[in-house]
Image (tube, rainbow, N blue to C red; front, side, top):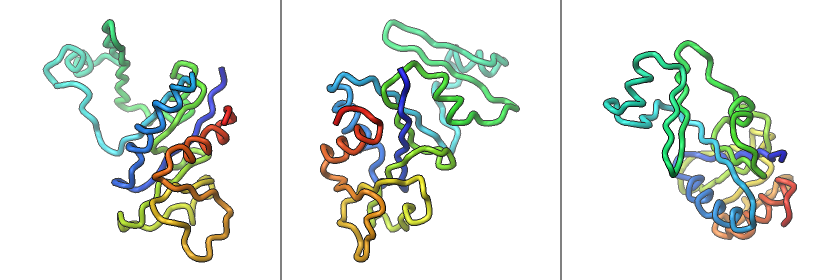
Length: 171
């Protein structure tokens, strides 16, 4: 099954995670399999340093798999390797109907910008051609040329329909 890859971007505090939390159950209720990739800008502690998996990584293991009856996780230490590209990460995932990506701003994928003027940061859609839609808690600014879709961030159903159409799935 080929997966569409769609990015969700926005400044910290704009509501990207909240929007994804609302969209995921709606997509899954439609019988779709959804993957999410989140890019971090800092080192995340995935387990306490004293746990077995962390100790194995600290001892030099390239990859450690933790598995239980409810989930598994693969932790790969980059050490001197370059950070993986989005394409490399998508290739490692199980097949899905759509993969939603938060971050990886340099990847060439269609993106939705979550934009809240109240965050106090400038919009990104004016300078990034891969942003094909904006979801905002405000109406389009005066003089909006309509070259991108403008969505009401509080209308989750409208954002869902846009996402389904953009992914080439039923709407």
